[in-house]
Image (cartoon, rainbow, N blue to C red; front, side, top):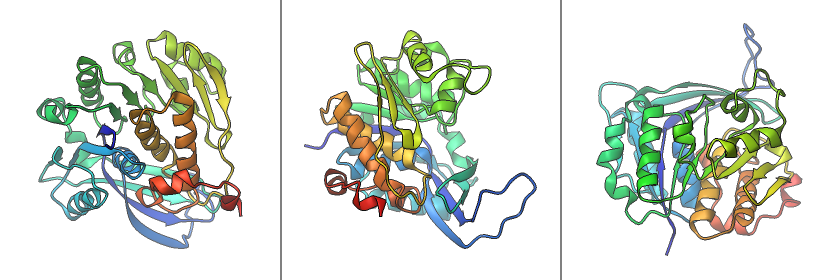
Length: 309
C-alpha cells in the first residue's frame, strides 16, 4: 500500500527563460530559450511526492482557463487525486515568470491568481481528503489563513504536518506549535526567528529557536551545502549530494515532496532526509519544476558520480 499524503498549496504555470546571467535591476538580458512548464510550490511538491511513491490528494485552486485545465490533466497523469482542486472561473490561474541562468541559479516573480482563492472553508469542505492520511504538507503560496486551517485539520486528527515556509513570512507561534517538521531555507528561517539582518544568528541558533517556538523538527535547507537537522535528540549538518546543476528552480519542492513520501512510508528522519536529498540532487540536473521531479526507481538507484559528469 502506498502511504497516503494530503498536499495543500499553489498551482502555477511557469514561463521559463534561459539566460546567461540573472538580470540586475533595470538590465535587459537576451535569452537563449523559452519554455512553458507546470509549476507552483504546492503542485511541485504533490507531483514529487506522487512520483516518490505516495498516494497524493491535492487541495488547490485553479481557474477554468487553459492553464488551469492543463494543470488538472497533468496532475491526473501522475495519479494525483484532484477531487479537492477548486476551479474558480473569472480570473487567471497562477503564473510564475522565471529566469534560469547558465549556472543553474534562478529568479522568480509570481502572480498568484486563483491561488489566492483557496480559502479556509475549502479546507473544511475537503474533510474526506484527510481520512486515513499519514501526513499533511503545505507551503505559503496560498493565504496564510488557509494554511492555518490545514494545520488545524492535521492537528485535530493527530496527523504529522510538514510546513515548507516559502515564500518567507513571519509565522504566528500558534501555527508553529502545530508543525511537526518545518523546512525553511536560511533566509526564511531568519525571517521566522526575527533576525535583523542575514547572518545575525547562526544556523544552529535559528534551528534551536524554531524548536523553542513549538516545532518538533527543524530542517534548514542550505542548497548544495546540505541540510541542518535539529530535533530534541539530534543535531547535525547533513551534507547534500554534489551534482552538475542546470536548474535549481524546484529543488526545495522536490526535497519536500520526497521527504513527505519517505516519512509517511515509515522511514526514520535520517533515512527520509537522505531519500529527499537524492531526489533533489536528481532534480537540479534537469530543466523545469515538475518535469524535474524523479520517480521512485530513479531515487533508489541514484548514483551521484554519474550526475557530476
